[in-house]
Structures are given as C-alpha cells and as structure tokens.
Image (cartoon, rainbow, N blue to C red):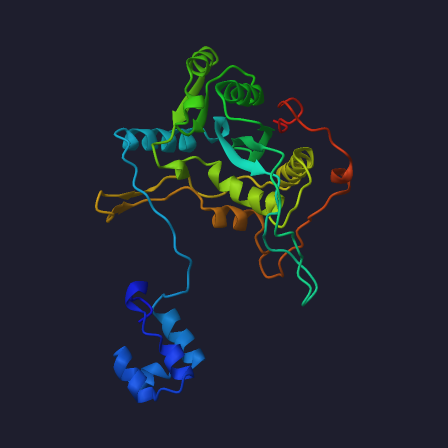
Length: 318
C-alpha cells in the first residue's frame, strides 16, 4: 500500500478507524485483510524497512530540451575530473529581500522563536554573485542590486585572480544571457578562461548549486534582517566560517544519471554530490564517537565589517 501512488491512496483508513467503523468493514473497503490493517507500529516499521520504503518529500523533475545537452554535460564531467584544482563555478543566488524568513532553530520547549507575520518590502532586492573553487572547496562572492554582464565579468576576474599563473581555467555557469555577453566572451578568450555552460533546465550540473542550500539555511533561515547591509554582513560571516571549516573533496568525480525522453533510466552513473552528501561530508560524525560540536560563532565574526561592494579582499587563500 505504501508503494501505491498517492492518488490511489485516498482510502481514509485512519479516519474510518478513528470514527468507529468496524475494522472488518474498513479492511474490505481498503482491499486488505484485518491482520494487515491492524499491524503494529513496530512490525510496520520492520516491513517497510525490509522492502526499502520510507516516508519522503516529493521532488520536482524536468528534462532538458537543449540540443547540445550531452556535449555540455560531457565537457563539464571532463574538466571536473581532469582539472579539479583549475575548475570553478559561478552563479547568482536570489533574489534576497528584507523580510522575515522562517526556518528551524533551537529554542526552549513551548517557547518557539517568533517572527513577525506582516512586513513591508521597502528595501528592494539583491542577488548574491557567488564563485566556488572545486579543488579547495572555497566559496566567495558579493551581493548586487541586479544581474548583469558587468557583474559577471567582475566575478570572472576574481576567479582568474585566484589562479594568476596564466594557465587555463574552467568556469561552469548557467545559460543566463548576462553570462554570455560579447564582453564576457572576449575577456574570457583573452585570459584563457573556458566558459562551460550548463544545458537548459539542467542547473544541477553547476557544482555551486549545492552550496546555496546551506547558505540559505544558515543566513536567511529564521532571520529578520533590518536592511541589506546587515544581511550582507551575516552572509560574509557565514562564508568566512564555512571556508575556515572546509574539507577537501574526497568523493569520486561528479557525473550524472541519464534519462531518456520517456523518463526511464538508461544508464546509471555517478552524479554530482547532492546537498545532503556535501553537508554530510562537511559535518560528518567521527568514527565510534558522538557528533562533534559545530562551531556556530567565532569571536572574530562579531567585529563590524564594511558592506562589501567588490571582490577585493574576499578571495580565499590559494
């Protein structure tokens, strides 16, 4: 019954039993025996575990219709496998607005953290332009008022500055028009920067996407920032903590699962680390011990920091 699609499970079994309907009648309506219907909670857990069934959230899925999908994904796989220390990723995260954002946090029992339900957006929006180094697992960036080719070019310059040796580097990014302006392409060609674009509707192929989940959790989750400078300082504080506690990648090179047009899996290969895998790798439990305490605050982060307007001073140590 657990493997039956949700649209076929509108039997309201629990509601009928709680309403006093005889179990024999409910079992007949549900198409099961009384023994199956009234199985104990522990036995039910064992049955579900034996059959590999768990209660999960639904996921969205969209097939890319990019005619060059396979070629783009193959190139991304090649550069991340062969040149991980010269491979970078770039993307815009947002919009970031000034409003109360719900999330999860520690709080005294029966006294949850309260956030205002009503707010007025009078501060506009920002976009975090993030850069990610695959080899060093370092993330940096700044918040901008808009997306634009000039901001993309500034981000690429900061990436090039992280590898000033003049040798080729590879930057994975999506197909946003601001990422493909003539000025961006000309600059990349002059400075030996290969732009590896992800296919349409395949943003998961950009390694930086997995880094935005923790950023959203630790920066905007359960927050009520008064203005954008405060939000930017919180964001930069998280980036400093994250980069200081980064661990070098230890997993296999990223690749993907291929799906045919009908949605059926043709071949199964390794795919980029999921958000869970990356976070689990960063905060893993020591072997034979209890989970280590995660440092959530550092004395140096309490010092005031100017609102960053450029990438200067934000580059990770090479």
